Length: 152
Picture (cartoon, rainbow, N blue to C red):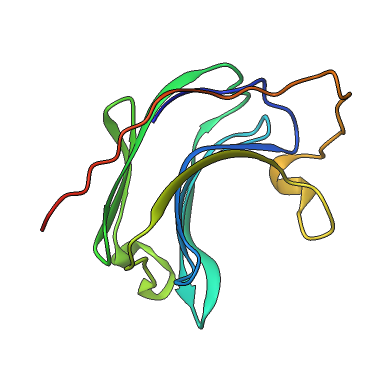
C-alpha cells in the first residue's frame, strides 16, 4: 500500500492497511491513531472473542500528511511481518502473543478512516474527537495497492 495520510486529528484513526476475517475473529492492523502515532496490532480468536494479542507503538507524534509504503507479510498460524518503506518494522510469531493465540485463517485487506468516538471507545486511546464542519474534508490518498498470494 502506498498512502499519504490525511491531516490527523484527535479521535481520527487512519487505517491505510489492515486485514480481517470476521468469521474467525482475526485481524492485523496498521493504525495511525489521532495525533499520537502509529500502532501495529495483531488480533486473534481467544475463547471465541476478537482480542488484541500483540501491539506495538512504533512512531509517535502527529504524522499528518506523511507518505508511507506499508506491507504485511502473513503466514497463517506462523508469522506476521509489518513492512514500512520496504523495511521490517516488526515481526510477530505465536511465541510473541498472549497465550500463543495467533491468526491462522485467510484474511482480506482493507483501508479506511474512522472516528474513535462513542460510548465504547476510550478517548484516552485516540484522543477526543471534535465534530468537523460539513465543509471540512479528510482525505487519505491511496497512490497504489498490490496484493500477492504466495503458494506454500
